[in-house]
Image 1 (cartoon, rainbow, N blue to C red):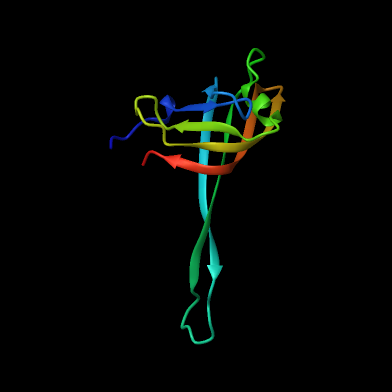
Image 2 (cartoon, rainbow, N blue to C red):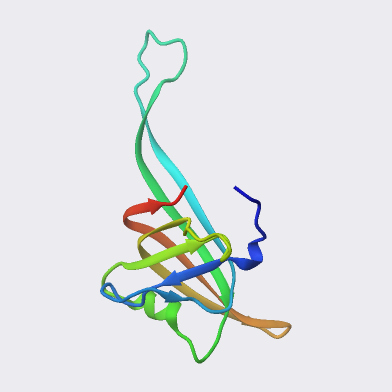
Length: 132
């Protein structure tokens, strides 16, 4: 696998539960966080803490520059159902890195000295498919 610059990344996001994902414009970064529940099974006769692996917890965020002609991220946050999202580390890499159903939270912020930007935090709402 080759190293890739993040500048070629892409996020595709649906705006409704039944909708097809479209490319989200003006994205500047995205993140994926994968944690796993740890179930403590330490007993008195163990010499150290012992745990079992539980369920995965997938979440992340994305941010970009607001465009008044495109409300994809906001519309996704207003969907009554989870929406489909796909993350691509680089458009030159043919395979998407991960995709699945998500619930989206949306916020927007502006300042005198900067561009108007949005942030969307997301959590998995079902199984994720990986291209690893």
